[in-house]
Length: 129
Image (cartoon, rainbow, N blue to C red; front, side):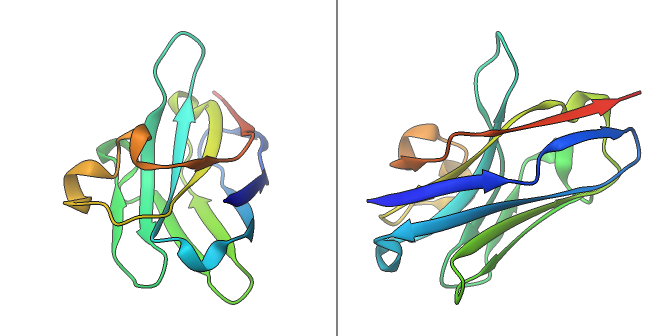
């Protein structure tokens, strides 16, 4: 089991930037992939970005490509999401997730919630126009 705690959410105007962090603890050695998802009320949770925990492969949802960057600090067991050029439609609760198994094929399966066993509690991001 991996425990995940997100931080860094808040309110920002359109065009601004935020950095989300997710601290992982517990059995982090068994982590294969970590990802960020987001959810707005009344809608399903959607994948934002994913990274192979022990490598450099990254995957992004089309709406955030070129604006968001996912990265990790394996030594400190922290996952990051740098969000730039934020838009009102980026407003959502952002969740950190960890998968303790391989995802095949990762390019098409990383956005599937059921691939991730461990979830954080979420952090709110609000972008005003």
